[in-house]
Length: 446
Ligand SMILES: [Zn+2]
Image 1 (cartoon, rainbow, N blue to C red):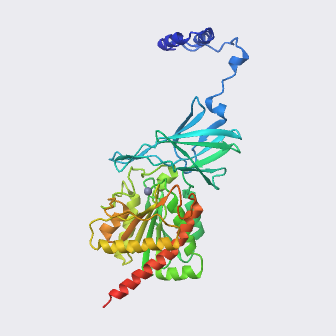
Image 2 (cartoon, rainbow, N blue to C red; image 1 turned 135 degrees about the vertical axis):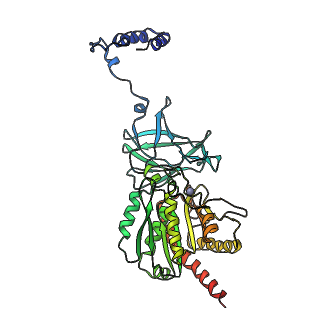
Image 3 (cartoon, rainbow, N blue to C red; image 1 turned 180 degrees about the horizontal axis):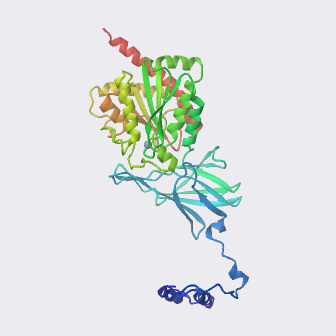
């Protein structure tokens, strides 16, 4: 044993019982450089043989499990007050001070009926090179016994950018998540459901950094007059877009009058899950090379550092070369406000773009629960997919943020079902939007 540790321990051993325990320990410890002696039976009381319950055991907690799909890596401990501290891990952007932690998804295991107080830490994000906190007094948490049926509950926002939540382990296990999860396995179920449908083509357009396949789902006739491109999940903590595209795809494949007339007018293209690696690993924002997939769209994508963007860009260039450039592109996200991000880069015909986006916003209000509005004059967010596709390819593109805490138009917490409902509504939004574009083009003809 280390003599200095023993000396320090001896100083602290002011009471007789502790001093006795230290002597027992010292007699068992081998001097440095010698083999430990065989265990000798000790004269100990039964109280000494019983290990003391840990702080976690005292509150009825056995384990915090994050060993499953989309679970968030984290550190945890139960402190002297019996509070379970959840410390999220940041993921980091390459060549940048930016860091992000905001996704949580884990399972508590413990005594049925145990009531636990959780404190969430590590929301000191750096966003766009500035300090940013991704949670607030509006933050909510999703709970589920089976990881399938989720309910949202409010959280307490405390000084020091912490979130507190009290939960009960009714059955001994409880899943917690920032938002209703949409995992790669959920996407695979959707792909299985629609694969082979005569209106669907699922193309493999590339691989993520870790080699996961990237899909482009086509719904409809590629010869239709108009095309719309949706991308979801460039940021792995934001599942909202996945639910939206699922709702839209399912609605368009219902063989009803609405879908038939929609698909006569336009064809839908969906990149459903750009940051699959981050989703698999339960990370918050960046890809596995530390790239933000909603940045750097003002230049050609790097095939090594951002293969997810390179795949989409290569697909888009092929479409443009074939004369099938989509007229509208929407990148789906979650944030704490919601709304359309309409950038105003110095491009020709900027006002015409803004006019069309105004129409798009009106149609969202008409056919979906959208109420959040759009970014105001002077708004820029360089390198986003919205700005990049507008600047480099002349495509009407925007970022759609879905509020992660509250759906004002429904006066309810978000849910997968509510976002699917939004996706259903997009069917008619695109129908009318492209109807206006068609009429505009006809009016311009000599
Ligand atoms: Zn995002």
